[in-house]
Amino acid sequence: MKRRDFLLLSAATLAGCHLPPPVFSDAAKISTALPDADDWQRLAQQLTGDLLFPAADDYNRLKKAANARYDEVPTAVIIRCQTAADVQHAVRFIRQYQLPFTVRSGGHSYTGLSSTSGVLLDIGLLNLISLRQNIASIGAGAKLGDVYATLGLQQRSIPAGSCASVGIAGLVLGGGLGIADRRFGLTCDALRRVELVTATGELIYCSNTEHPELFWALRGGGGGQFGIATQFEFDTFATAPIRNYIGRYPLKDGNQVLAVWQQWLKTLPDEIWSQATVWFNGQQDSKPEIQLRACSMGHPALLSQHWYQLALQLGSVWSEVDMQDHQYLDFMLTDCDGLEMPECKLPNQHERGQLKRVAMAGSSDIFNDYLPLSALHHLLNAIRKRHRDGFRGGLMLTSMGGAIRRVPPGHSAFAHRAAVLSAQYLFSGPVGTPEAMLQEGAVWVNQMRKQMRRWSSNGAYLNYTDALIKDWPQAYYGDNYVALQQLKRQYDPDNLFRFAQSIQPA
Ligand SMILES: Cc1cc2nc3c(=O)[nH]c(=O)nc-3n(C[C@H](O)[C@H](O)[C@H](O)COP(=O)(O)OP(=O)(O)OC[C@H]3O[C@@H](n4cnc5c(N)ncnc54)[C@H](O)[C@@H]3O)c2cc1C
Image (spheres, helix red, strand yellow):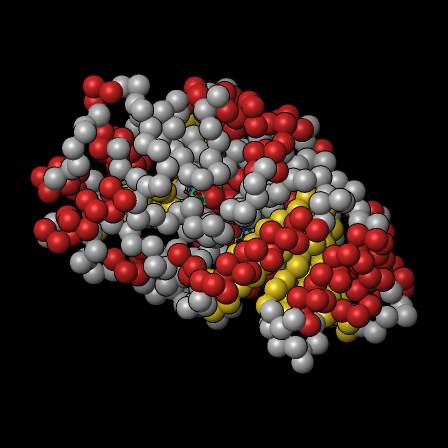
């Protein structure tokens, strides 16, 4: 390590963590000094993966997360873990020297939770995927695109999200919403077993029979809280072709469209998933529209029958409807159209990655009842105003229920089993969007949540983190928070894994 790098690291180590340092129960093993160059050298020798300081080739590429809002965070050192043993060595080292750190799988955290000015533990290389007797074994650094591509070759899949570059770890630990969730449950509902490095660097396994209470917490309790997952085992389902409808309607008719759409959602079998979206790009003369989507895997006729009913009820509203049938893999890998799998990554995830990064902020709402007309009026007025004022923004309303709701509320740490709809409020701009603009967007998405408070459960989806939510324990975890705090006390009493909105040990 060069002296300049070491000085930079030391400065970041001292200044990087704004949270109070933990008081370790095994104080005898804790060093009060910062690691020196020899200590780093020793760590490097223990690792199969790499230790990268700011002067290293690739450092600038690898330090960036998916959200360009955090590009300027001056990461001191990157540990690229290649094996679970690497993660164990790294955790023990971080603990010994009390270094600020975070862990990154896909790097999509909305609030930059996988960016740090201290040590970045990048587990992206722990990405092996295999299938045996219909059980998928997935390295915690794998991206959803690779998961779909590898399992899809054997006509199997897991219920998960829609974006190829999202990491399996962050997704499953926070729950995992996607087009198959009403039929097969959340990503975390398909989880059978987790390999995890604890706060003391021990490698343990969590399942219904091994550390079952921690397994409960890992299904919806969120990333970066109880340990570092290194591998997951999932139940899989057999894939089938997907039929997809998209209907476009003028935003001015939005109240009627969403009212009819919600009535229609109530009639849907679990085989059908649906979403309503509105996007506007900040140009006042553009004409935003409401887009309704519905898709079904393996039940094309059922979907067409239902869509026909929706179209009948919306007959008086101008629309443009598109229906397409897709092979399962083509549909799930839409992001990768024309790209080979290494190219279907963000540039920071793979040197050949060609997917585009954005700077963004988001927030969410959980609704346990469908929205009455007064709520739709309120929601769409706020959206129309945002458009009229010439700002960027987006709204996504997504069907929940079905298999998600059939899991009893206390069965896992995911708190929103009773939901019928989730809402996502989004602001996004190109790489280089000024921070002032991003802050304005973050305030707007949070205000959308406040405006809908009267009708929401007050819940928020943990994977759409919003740093401005004040009552976050209740919003993310609901009644599960107290149990999660007790587990935190049991598995991470010194609060090694901590950030602004992390679970506090009881
Ligand atoms: C473009 C985009 C599309 C999305 N689509 C969906 C979707 O369809 N469905 C959905 O449910 N969500 C979706 N999300 C939200 C997504 O689930 C969360 O952002 C999730 O946290 C991303 O996981 P990651 O591994 O990519 O992120 P990271 O930023 O790497 O990790 C997220 C959090 O988990 C921690 N973490 C990472 N790896 C580990 C590990 N191995 N062990 C323990 N903790 C870890 C991090 O420290 C951080 O706190 C989307 C987000 C974006 C930006």
